[in-house]
Image (tube, rainbow, N blue to C red):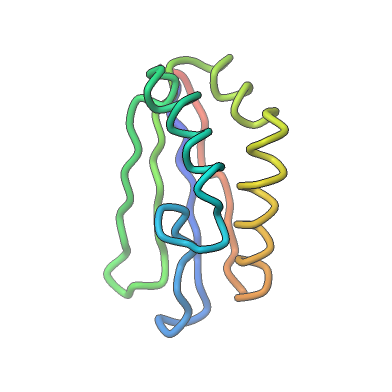
Amino acid sequence: MYRVIAKHTRPSTGVEFFNHKTSPLISQDTGAYIRENYIITGKIVHSEESLSENGLELTVTSIYQDEATYNEWKNDSTIAEQFYAVSNSYREANGIISVIESAESV
């Protein structure tokens, strides 16, 4: 398994975190692509979110099948164009800073 921990920090609680599951910016086709190619296949094993006490930091922990699967996800052109481009644009426009805190085999 390969665990990736990302932290997203927003400027205030009045700014919504990007939520790919409910965002109208992510098309149904993209959601279906992710489900069919990563969720149903077991390539993404688990994902969970936790919010800090002050509500400013969202930590997302994702578990991939292995490091190769994580690299596949990062290099997938559909994910890059229709998921990361949209989510990164939203975060940039709303002052949300995102960093990968760790990525390691577990």
